[in-house]
Image (cartoon, rainbow, N blue to C red; front, top):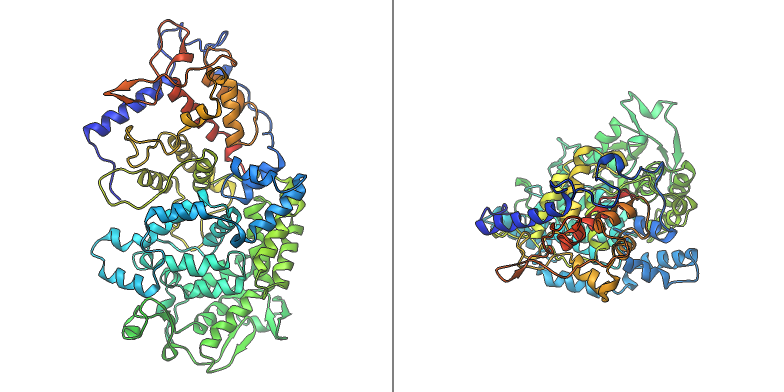
Length: 611
């Protein structure tokens, strides 16, 4: 994508914007004007004291925040219509969300259609042909760019919110770097065919589907694994990241089948399996999966049909006897060797515990009681062949007391923070890839997400984005997130810095619509309205800090002028007017710009960043 243009018009627009913002937030030099409110001189030692612990929002807000891509008042309105009390409503909401096909998502579908995406429905063969014919990097990587934008649209606007939140979980679990030069052009089928059909379905089906996807094959080099020189990259991550987890790794053991320290169990077919895996199991699993490849991806498959599609090549498969987790694979098993391996791993109790722990950590908190993890693992293991296995486990977690009573042990990463902010503020934003010289809001948003460390499908390692509070609370990630969130309120549609276009989040228009009577546009009313919309409640000291900033020296109940605007060359500047004379009139100074900054304070508050 193109870099920001350095045109005179661009620089002028940016300078106007920054002048307005700084005029609204920087104390003036006249000491009489620095007294923003009676009895205050604006010094840091007079800021409200931080509370010992943050307050909690209402139950419905807590639950919706963690089970969606971000709390929205629209979700709360729909939730409140589902029953007579919170528990009944939550039961109905979860049931509804776990049946996404029954939810009318026409508005989101219409927005997706309006974006004009051209690659998302293409077959692997069509994407392969387009990749081979691409003459530019932009065209080559358009499939992953469109998947990225479509995913953002769904996360922001889909009514199937639990589905989208869970799809994000599975993309982290089966993590693929979407911008791989070979795999990126083939990414849509990975999302469309390997992940999304199985989000609430059967883990075993998703496990094999992700393996057979060209994007995963390129990510972990399985397409080059042949008899005589197996590539262990995929086999190792299959066990360490996709199924058993490092918690079930026993290391290098000379003779694991005769080692009494390695426990066993009886599997679904009455066979003995080990509960832990060792390095020999990885090597043998790599042999099991030799010959699983992509048509046309190597010299050996260059003449095969269906380029870009999964292919099993018998001639490239190791036909010898193999032994994985104490279980023999007879010679000549062919492709059935791989399907048996996926069966073994999908029904393994170690896999159940590992994935249940990750699901609990995603939806409940960084530290989850072992009893809940075990209950979810037991259900995952018992239902390993059920078509709705994953939905059953998620329902158990979301209805647990641990989910309902916990709060604030997790924080939103940059991507979840941005999507949450756009949902909460009812943004009008349809991200689309762009290859022009125009600096679009899509380009700015994705660039800033990448800088903050959580651009979608951009994690280079196969372990997926981290899911703990410590990962996103560093000065780097948090600092760039806090710069991005208020910036969302300043971005314009079509051309991000061009004041001639509407905002993607028009907080002025929404505020005026909420308070059509000018006498009601007081700082107390306005900040209360936006606290309710963004946070779901009015916590202190956040409410008071934002209120004092918006009102300046005016009383909380004094009406503010949120209409009168500066005009330049006949164009409204969306800032309000300059007003520092006479003194003590900061409440009239650039009020429209100050409104956006005040709402930006709410987006940067600890309450908003918590989960």
